[in-house]
Image (cartoon, rainbow, N blue to C red; front, side, top):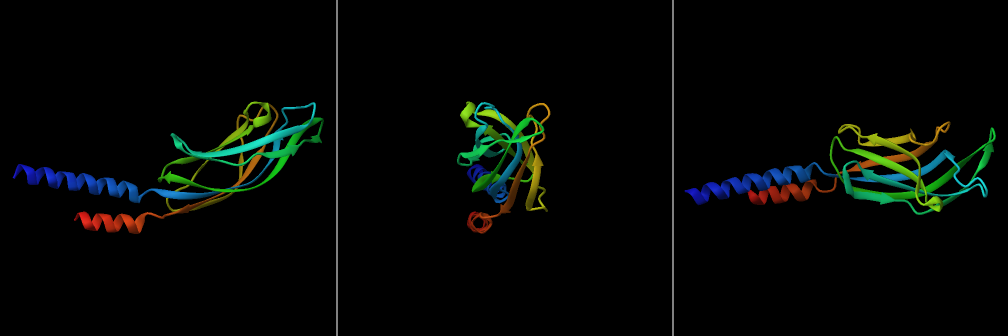
Length: 167
């Protein structure tokens, strides 16, 4: 009887693991552009921008855009950079309650931070599209990042099949 009890307990644990996998989603993340970024190289007025997106607290779940070059425009005497992206990637492992953190850096200056923002999707929401204000952008700068996040649920049918097989 003891062996049966252990097997029954293991099956319950396996089902609990499957339930947690079932709640996992893939996110389709699009980086559309950034505007008002601080220029770090005032001599050339150029920036080499990279945007990364990751699930907060889950460093293994991260994607990064390719390098995009931008040239500063002179607004009120302080150089600012606007860039257009056409980057799209898949971010795996998102569960309800996770935040997506976007980090913008200038790789020409040794990956110096140009700003950071986060987006939190609610379980009901499923999509976010718009501008997010970048924080930690430097005094006097209020840059924005244009992003689109779409939640996709890819694992549900497989999880149900595995859970049914365990039953």
